[in-house]
Length: 78
Image 1 (cartoon, rainbow, N blue to C red):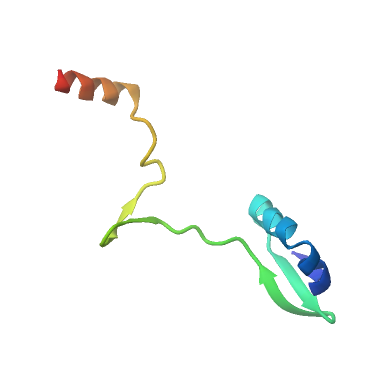
Image 2: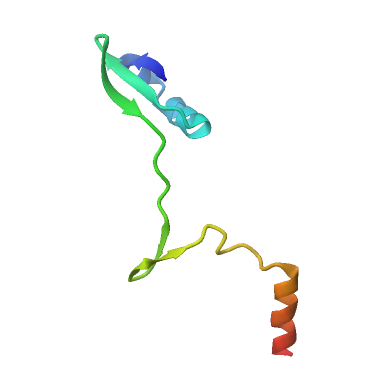
């Protein structure tokens, strides 16, 4: 885990956030040589649908249908 001073973190916060997102590695921030905070990747949260908290929407929900399934839907509508 990388360690940086609070002064450096203040000056480079945007770059540090991009680094954490890109690498998935946490960064420890120190003040006067003592660790005081950790910037770490956020845990992904599942998508929710309206008022149904138990229903989770898959990440590929908006992806195009496979060609075979699309043809079946088009044939049913004809």
